Image (tube, rainbow, N blue to C red; front, top):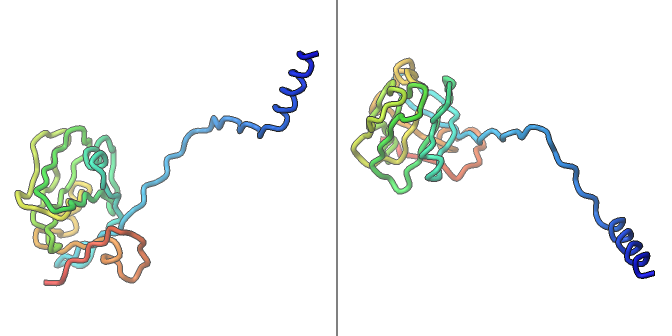
Length: 174
């Protein structure tokens, strides 16, 4: 009798419990990273990029490594908070990049064009910077971007757009 009562109780318990979700065996889709607008003002005009942002130590260590391509209006921004002397290399980076080292006043302190893939030679402005912006190799030359040009990002780069970001960089005009 005890066995039948136990089996009945277990059966009722199983019937009353919430159903288990069936496992989802579909491919996991990675969410696209949120992009931040960056505008560079040059003698030839303003140029907009929509870039990924590397904020954490791990994101900054990985950067654009293993990427096979980078679009003409994309890139990656590495904010430095607090500003510091940054040094980058190209180990495990498959494509050439233009590296723009940006001062706290928004001007480009140093531009290293067409960095060599896989190089372990460090690239640095040698001065504290607010950020480093990486673009596809050759874009800076193609657009006339040079040292001294001004950079802004987030809502400050595109004040006419509603940009929800805590990463606004609004350097004052010279």
